[in-house]
Length: 164
Picture 1: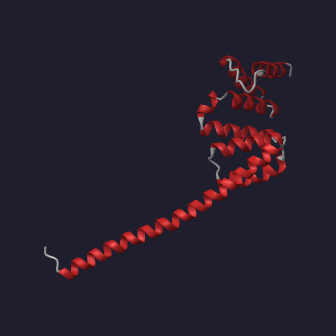
Picture 2: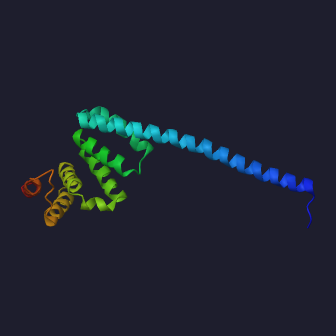
Picture 3: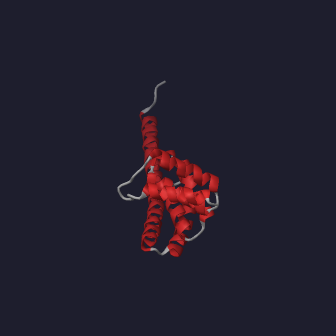
């Protein structure tokens, strides 16, 4: 099949136009995604700052918005769990910390996460689950440098469960 010179030009122009439209579409969609990322990052940074300052109610409002936008984010669920625990909402905190562990199963190897999770489960009155988590903390024999009385705290919480 032989194409005339003008047919080849139209094919080339069509191909170039297709590529240009693709680049423009990618740019528009990418910039929208960048804007969403910046909004989410700003919300997270503000919630984290408020949490670190001890303003848990305000941090809770921001993290709730962020959880709606990023429900499958490990760090958002983790921060949400910590904020809810500090606001006294232990059942929601336990759900968020469990989701954090579901998203990243390697969290079971994080001593501070496991202690926090065990405490939250205890305060959420999920005693059997708390006992399982805290027994795991004891079995692993963790002694984080940032928390030298880690094992004493684990023993204290386990004793508290046994005395209930």
